[in-house]
Length: 297
Figure (spheres, rainbow, N blue to C red):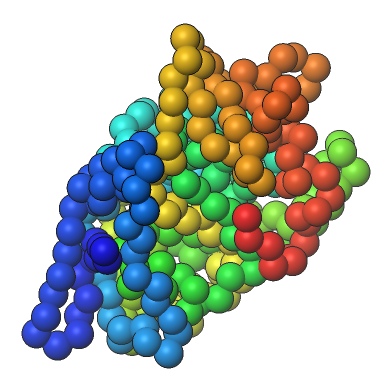
């Protein structure tokens, strides 16, 4: 069984399916023990020349540096999972390393650099989305064809760039854990919802509007932060026991979630993998993911 949830401009034929129906079909199959219906794989050589996703609704970010939380909230809504921007942000750990958590104060002016304010990268965003029951994966060092393949398969993608695609230049930030991270001024997120022969269509977290950027504008800025992205393949099976929500974690572990936030440092975490902090002690914070290595989880 193959599901398509986008409009493919391939001549006179256009096919689409509701993302909510797709989510319900996958979740029902998982709970029933049936084979999960998967979206058909799209390979680079078979990519349609143009594709655009319907149903992704953008909203303006609520705080100065909350673009990642806004993009994640709107992406989740596309899959039928509703929560507020503040609910999502409350599940992000705090860190001075953007690969491990949100850096600084989200109410600082746009363009603020670490440590006073900045943002967060793909790993913690994907982990928080998984805590809401979505099969989210972070990607680093991705290619344009891989982005296109997600859109052609009906799956919007969060991408990291800068406000207005400004080429502000790459800087290095040494965090308190001794790791050096790539950072850029005006770091910002968008949701990729389409492409054609000349460029990409992105929902800007700043104002919620869909904007078109030529490849010559988008690609150099996307590459500044190592071609970073977060994808969602669909819902995860969720089980509730008492006050705990249980969802599959990475590497076959179970995530146990309670409340609406993660605690880091010496406090007890409210989300953990077999009693280990799920985000602050994850692979993203153990020196396995710094610089521009190609890693997908």
